[in-house]
Image 1 (tube, rainbow, N blue to C red):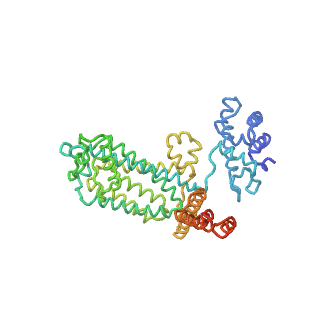
Image 2 (image 1 turned 90 degrees about the vertical axis):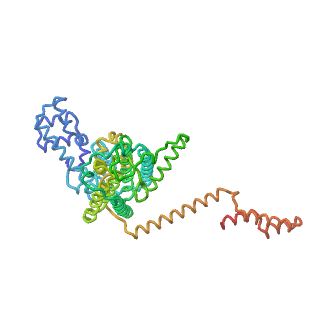
Image 3 (image 1 turned 60 degrees about the horizontal axis):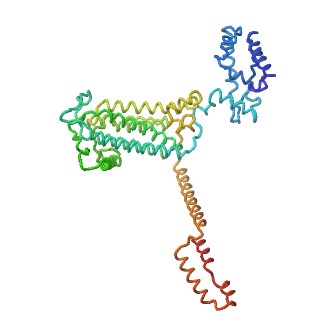
Length: 481
């Protein structure tokens, strides 16, 4: 009976028997038999293929035949891709799940079917399988973010040199700034809220089971947003938003004609290092002007808020409410301090939130995206394709306990210790002439004593057996060391 065989192994006659059981017309049966449609071909049929049978190959199909055959093949495909209990590969069988599942050689047909049709089904609820550690990718994302922060610091030095003169260019009209008085301590409060959010995010990263994926995504998105910020604040210089600010382009300007271009670059790099080491924060003593479009503080607050809410359990309503309040109050403090225009803050929040959401939407649906349009994804999102190549769904929010983390840390320390000792031992063995100065001096003394004790040929046996020669001492010294 045709139902006892896997669909992919159906013959043309089995397909025709199935079509008769589905009560298709004679024209459909003749087409299936004439075109030699077997089970594997049937599973790959799409509605466009069925339409081509009528309009390009001129089979006498009715419109209802096209729809019925299309729906029947979809129904057959859904029934064939159910999973059989106890197995990790799909059941390609028209019958119930207790029937024969595909084994050994038939798996090649299953893999070919999935490769040509779509990606394999994900785990339950679209959650990702366990992603590999991939420390190298995390290191690459960290290096990318590190380079971008240096570029940002250097650009902030450049834009400070180009800040418009406050006497000639007063603050631009702004609905919020024109109606809210300046609060001097507000900007410090903004940075304190950012520090609180960063502390919460650090705890999440420490205890999250897939912390390398989280760090990789955080560094990648943060680096991209701040790299875009370098472009926006460099191409257009806005006037200083508050009259209370003391911004002078001569603070950072290199106007000494006696210094060379290399000395000028070195001076700018030293100033950039001051900004970079202070994380661009005023509570660290960093004060810059001209870097207005768009707000870097808003970017940091928004990124931290979104990452905390994404990678913590959904039922932690208090934590999520607190992070959103800190985000909103941080933005309010920026505006209340008159450190940025309203447009700076709005653009920063919009770009950061959209980039976060777009990235995670692509990452959570990457299996379908890569199977249908992989070339375009790799071209337009090369960094995303590289970082997320091993992730096939939503990262589950699972956490390690303190005991398991301590056990893992202890195992890592032991592994490093054993690796260092093994490497040192191999290096020591590979250097036969490498001995310590004490070993060399001891071997010299022993050689002198042995030469004094040797008075003739008869004493040579005594010298060889009773005294330790230099070569034996060196070998013993190596073992002891």
